[in-house]
Length: 276
Ligand SMILES: O=P(O)(O)OC[C@H]1C[C@H](OP(=O)(O)OP(=O)(O)O)[C@H](O)[C@@H]1O
Image (cartoon, rainbow, N blue to C red; front, side, top):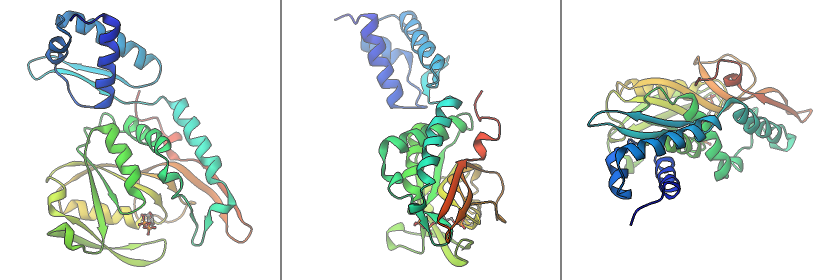
């Protein structure tokens, strides 16, 4: 039975948004709806128009035999700022202060809707970097890495602290997590990442940057190309073991004795937004 344009557009939009960055041949749609490719192209133009003019990313069409159309997630600057301003307000709650200048965030890292928005922000910033994999370190980085990877349409590789028999043969490096001056061994299973992958590092929190530094050193053993690193929150300014980490929020000031903490927008909002 023939699909009406309005029904085709609803069905196509869902399929495209459900598989970010995945190329879908126009013939797939032409066959599914028993419609000419020229009509499908017109449908896609309408979908692209609505998404791109409402700050929700857009469609990218590649011509040729291996061509097709794919959804590129994106969030516009003001929406991203709205999301992060409300998160900063939530994080500026003295009850969240933990010893060592950390903030309690595990409740937030368990909220799917918030994680979806944060993942979309990362996917907007790194949309054009041809990321092949997102890498994080257990444990609190995992939900954030998964959210970013979902919107980038790529897998996640999880770095383990210490050795686990379930990881098979691993590459291991030692690192000093500056926050607590403790030596940590970071290991990654050899099977979890193809050599030469373009990798985005994501973690929940950065203090001295020792953990991210350790992941960069570990990834060089895989000949990986670390195209960027992002953290949800970076601690108050201090000596760092790593440069150019993009933060969504930043602890401006924190005083454990006075029980005060002030969390502001991170350096992503100071620099130029990653997408035009
Ligand atoms: O910048 P650094 O000084 O290296 O500190 C940031 C580390 C420390 C903390 O991890 P932990 O709380 O130690 O581990 P987990 O994520 O498992 O809670 C955080 O999640 C980052 O990974």
